[in-house]
Amino acid sequence: MSRLSVEMLAADTADPITSAGHAQLGIAVLVGIAVLVLLITKTKLHAFLSLTIGSLVLGAVAGAPLDKVITSFSSGLGSTVAGVGVLIALGAILGKLLADSGGADQIVDTILAKASDRTMPWAMVLIAGIIGLPLFFEVGMVLMIPVVLLVAKRGNYSLMRIGIPALAGLSVMHGLVPPHPGPLAAIDAVHADLGITLALGVLIAVPTAIIAGPVFSRVADRWVRVTPPDGLVPTRPSEELERRPGFGVTVATVLLPVVLMLIKALVDIVVDDPENHVQRVADVIGAPLIALLAAVIVGMFTLGRAAGFTRDRISSTVEHSLAPIAGMLLIVAAGGGFKQTLIDIGVGKMIMDISESWNVSALLLAWLIAVAIRLATGSATVATISAAGLMTPLAADMSSTHVALLVLAIGAGSLFFSHVNDAGFWLVKEYFGMSVGQTVRTWSVMETVISVVALAFVLLLSLVI
Image (cartoon, rainbow, N blue to C red; front, side):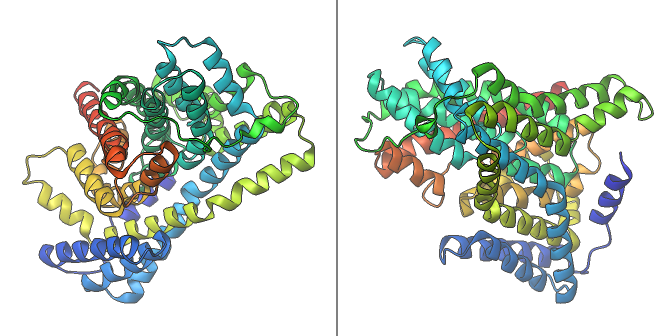
């Protein structure tokens, strides 16, 4: 463990800023989360402000001095931005380059050209999985929806058989695989190893996406029959371009950060000697910051230049990629502040004390907490960050692989049953032209399948590893 990790762990397990008993702390948590839920759902207050106010209420009800609460919140906010802020920004830049250059469309068109009628649902989940790696869920959905509607219309396919696999591929990546904001924030909170989490996340994501995508789409198709709505097929980014980057180089660029981080994780396991030159090189090139930065720089040439972008156009693409993530960064940062407030008032220690008498796995407990917050707030990111904050003390005594599985259990719980308080629910409903009931029977159930199946694989791996 690095010196920085030791210092962070020491900070997380420091003496609480309040001497409140378990009952008062329990009430403080319930009131803090209730305020958070009400502000997000009833008053429609931005999640950043809701998390900030919720943290102050949490500390006040716990009886902590308000100046100490403010310090805890500020330090948590700062450390979270330091840990994941740059990575989220780099991921956004890579995703924007992929979308604007036509690289995403090139992946789509190449795979669809080789897919038969029988394999089309499998092709859709593969496409969504690949382009969903560097893209935020909402961006991936905006890119995939035109493809889904066009394929369904031209090939006379059922919208559910094509759409559900695409949505499943995007959602699984969003909840389980870094560098998406939720998994990154959870990794930072519990001090998990990013390489191990990435490797196990991909291992769990593949079968989960298959079950929730091509397999479940057969069931969804029997439950709901809808035709692609007219006039909802937006233009694709690459239609105005004279040329696009090649398929092979595009896929290689997208997978570059994943490969570099996995190499680091593999070398760490095989060599396990911090003084070894091979491991030191792997630690540098596989560091998330370097891996994503390398992909962005490579992408400027393999994606931007290949699409005929000038230097000014590439610069403009980078600039436009950062503006939309300001809100996301603030939410993740405030979530880090909320997490640190939970820890510093002693809630983590309370959960550790209480859970010792419970006959429940820490992984299952983490999943249940994330599920509860997800159902209440509708936000996968808020659920992930809050659950990670509550589970941080339990992660201190776990092995590196089980801490990674803890992150994945939280990520799985954060996807459970998306419903009317989730923006993604309405996005799917409107794009696919479904009623609320039809969206629940398809999208909401698919999210639940992802959550439960991913948890099952997490628990299975915890017995094996």
